[in-house]
Image (cartoon, rainbow, N blue to C red):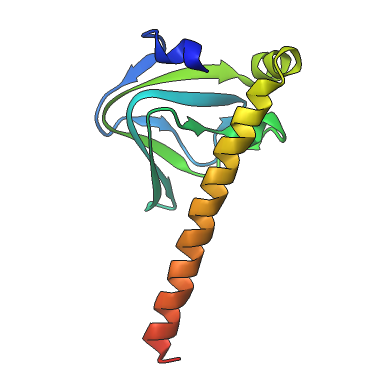
Length: 128
């Protein structure tokens, strides 16, 4: 993915521009080359991703629909990679899958920390 760091490719999104909506087809991965993207579910912000993050990694394994809405925060540049092209690239360069799994594990850890903090907050709120 270092190829994408050195080149100005992709689509530029303006501040508050919707990149995709919850429920849209998920048949590509979007690499954030510059800027930030907010992910929200039912209008509630769930995460903000930045440069070198990817959106839609799950479509590699299971095409379906987007589980969140993505909105550009400020100006951002994203590179869209179609699922079929990415799967083909992974088969020729297995190290790419390692990088994708590493990114996925990092996000999983962030989700676990978020859940843990919410559980702590609930316990405090309920006096437990």
